[in-house]
Image (tube, rainbow over all chains, first blue to last red; front, side):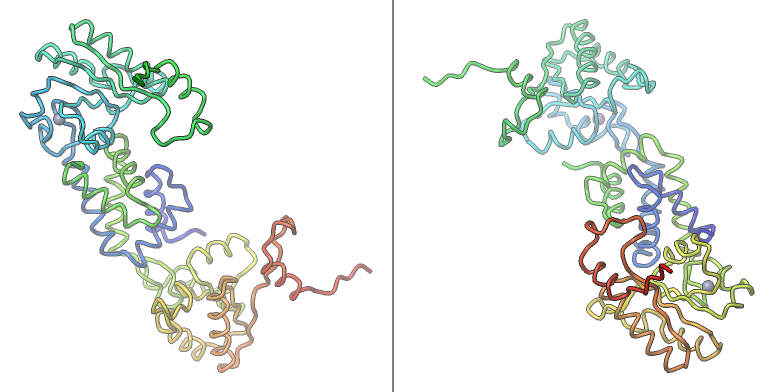
Length: 202
Length: 202
Ligand SMILES: [Zn+2]
Ligand SMILES: [Zn+2]
């Protein structure tokens, strides 16, 4: 015996969520039924609406329920002539929170991963090429993740940019500010050495 | 800047799920939008239906979309005259999986917790009293959790049962089978000593 058919189905459906196994799904279903009936109804409604209405920005590919996202629609963002390439909409939010960058973004929604069937087309690189052809950008900033796939993706896009005569930069990687050297992994530490800069103590 | 209004609302709504904070909710929302659109629509639908239709069994209080759950409706389950008291529908499933118990259940949907406003009424103990008055049970098995609250709840229900002249037992607690003594907490170990039985090696 398991639970009632509908409860079994709810527990199964919840397991499409990332890192939710049978045990957590059961805990979620019970919590919803026992203490969160109105919150759960609201979640069901918002989820349905979000999946119906949220798509990708026609220009930068980030998630938005508009045709063009507010960042792309803001004319001030075009002034710097900079375009920052990131893997995920969460990266846009993280960079925006620093308040340091005032240009526009292009969101890959992933990275090159041939074994998973993710090639240039899946990352919208044809769209990026069109954009680079249409507009004269002053700089393309590659902010993909410092992973093997992120680096490969950055190299691939750098080639495209060079083809269009756009200057390309890659964000710096190294020991995090406030981090302790002995706790940093070897790969980061080598990056940190290779990317060292002249220390001007005059 | 955060995400789009609808995406922000989805991330917020997902946080009603237990142990889901802003970071996991964001990860869930992205996964649903990127890879699980149809599974997500299905989840929204099942969640809505479950919250509308699943209630509590009129007799044993477990979750069911019926008026009376299949276990209570099964006449064979009444034959033993046993009634097992558990805290949660998950406990029923766990006990059923042992295949050892053939009686019926009463599901408290919690335990006594005066500070959280959970008293006898919230656990349906009035319902249990009626049931004990209506039927002559041979044994009431207390299978609440071996926690302070579970024990207090077991004592409370044992009093009710005595009042109705029903024989009461408590499931045994001790070192789990296959467990190592040195890894077991002190409380379990004292229980295990107090509940020791004569070892017949003749
Ligand atoms: Zn955009
Ligand atoms: Zn029942």
